[in-house]
Image 1 (cartoon, helix red, strand yellow):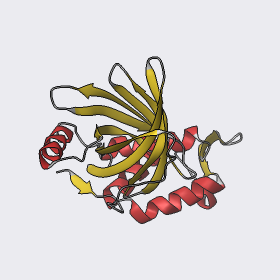
Image 2: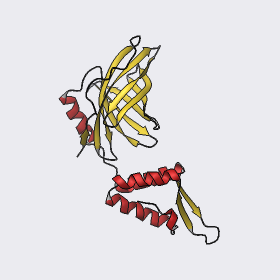
Image 3: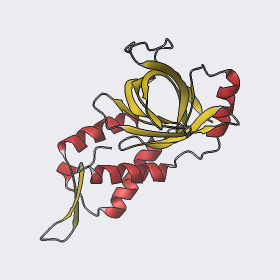
Length: 219
């Protein structure tokens, strides 16, 4: 069942410069990680080029305000990077579906993983739009606990927050966390479910045979 999260504020965002043409954007994005659909609304300025229009503006959802920069092309494609303050950008790519009158696409972020999104330009979403989008999101299978756990561990290793090494004397595999890795693990402990915690421990136990008490993951 898809849970719908609303924007923090439902009023229109109006921080823009008059010299640019303006368009509004309304939509939902689906996070298969948590099986949640989140409403978003925004406003962007754009300047028309030979084959595409540069866009730049603001979006707002339940996670706060973000900035977007991208392109709206004559081939009815929309793409932009969405950036919350201090976070890596999230890449959105849409294609126009003439039959349903909506832009349908996907999103992917370095620390936000990936999901799906549907939006509409220049008009509010009507109930029929929302009903269609939620049914569309139900066609995607939520991420399993095993996939979540592996993705989190892979991300931490890739970013240098989690180190896997081998003891030069004993030859045993060792695990240690960077300072940022420890902070991330402590934050995760507040939201991680018991099932996810058990699975991560199984993955770690399978991969790492011995962990120093001082470096133990605080999940």
